[in-house]
Length: 513
Image 1 (tube, rainbow, N blue to C red):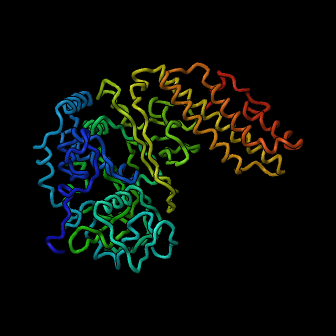
Image 2: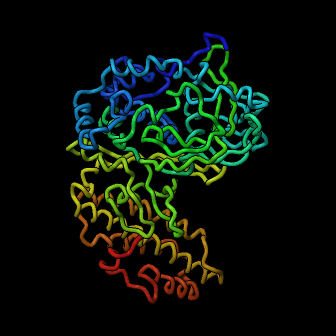
Image 3: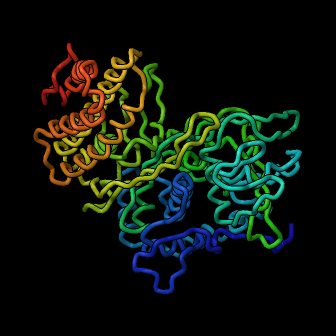
């Protein structure tokens, strides 16, 4: 490769940012060094799509931990928390940023001999590249149909380097399982891969008033036994890892943040290294890696007793997950566990400065991609159980009430539809119409009550919304005698059914979503 074919992530302007004090001739995008040294002046990252930002946060958390020395806690978590609080007050140290990044500058080149987060061996281990259309999620590749853009493998459009980094990150963290390009390593020749470590998940990231607060709030204290040389990030390794080596447990938070990848990629630049024109995409490891126990997802337990990350759902509003962020043990049959990162967020700042950004990718477990997911809460982490336990539990009960009447509404309209049509109870257009009526109004009611800290009798408001939605959806069929009988018979589901409890406040508080 031409020695001038370089794209340094340290200096090139590839991350779009929002400055805290307005443009004032500041660049709309920055490189990694500027991002870290001026993190106090940057309000937030404006990188997209949502799963790319979630992946980038994890990379930045790891680098921030190294630069600040928060990658170690040999004297225990309390001392680590004190150091983090001091760093929040003092701001980033440019000398420390340079001391860490300068010796690794070659490994932050997108197209260097050891390209950033890529495996240069793929050019010799894969018989052919996959194509730039395969790299860019959303583009049709191979024999797939054209839906959202007219891209063809015969004349693929190059993608600029900043966008290519986003898709590289999404492949590593959210890549599909199943068929991929053939890769031959020693005597092993395979053409299949496991899913990425975050596939189909929703991540929750605390965000402060500026990027420096955000990066520090996103750090998790390491175990006291963790040593930096034992928990290396990919760009810190002298050579790429052996794809045939047995999987091992992760030694610390940084290796978990930048581990678990099941895919390997290699980007091919144009002559000026301004665009990516091709890409190798294949399997990265044969042995399935252990779970990373990611600190930014809600963990819940299946009926078989297996833990799994709460999946991203583009149709599920963020307020329905709020109690799983505020409470250590929220109500529910799935035994949800709060993301570990929130265990120490309250120790960083005393005031109400932290909001939560949810970032994810609605996907199935294999190959189907549905929709990016992104939402942000108000600044309400001052209502966490550790600070205001009674309010946090009331918010949990409020969420439970909203879920309860949303579930009852869905069953009621399905039963009415089934009785009118002499069919089995199943998903139907009525259920979609009822959901479209109920859930946005339920969300508005939820936040109104939370802001006012008014929780008395809130279940009545959700019941009223469910009744209004039910009446609206069934108004037409209820005009006939047969339809009216079916509608009134099914209406009982709004109150718990014939043999159920009729929606008393105590019953709502005890029900789970």
